Image (cartoon, rainbow, N blue to C red; front, side, top):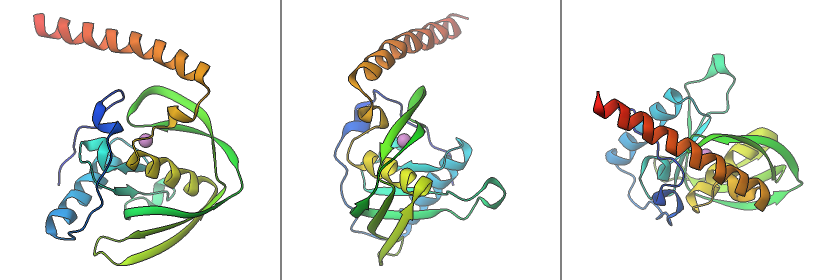
Length: 178
Ligand code: NI
């Protein structure tokens, strides 16, 4: 197992199309274990493969309360086949620096996917777990939660991000010159 670096917006891989998984082998299992370890280490409640630079339709997540964490779930090639209701709620993302914002999502969803062995599964989720899954499935389509914000909020964030990136670069340059 290994903790992998998490790509941050505006990394282009986060915007790429992700291929469906067709081989359910030991390599996939090892990738899933690495993704879970990376997610728990971050810590986050969900992680999509493109966030670690793998352009495949894979999600790991764990929406259990803190004391019950460790038994993560996997969705491979997930598709939302039904959605109803609407709810606003706060979101952040391991790939988006220093931002939490309200995003509107469907209240309840039904997802068809495959498990780690390739078996077809259907899951229903509502409220916060439904939000987590919609956020992660967005990643598989190259969509980030900032895309759901108003253009004004997004513009403000881009301005803030420029500053963050500049500060990161300065810190790095300073480190290098020591
Ligand atoms: Ni995210």
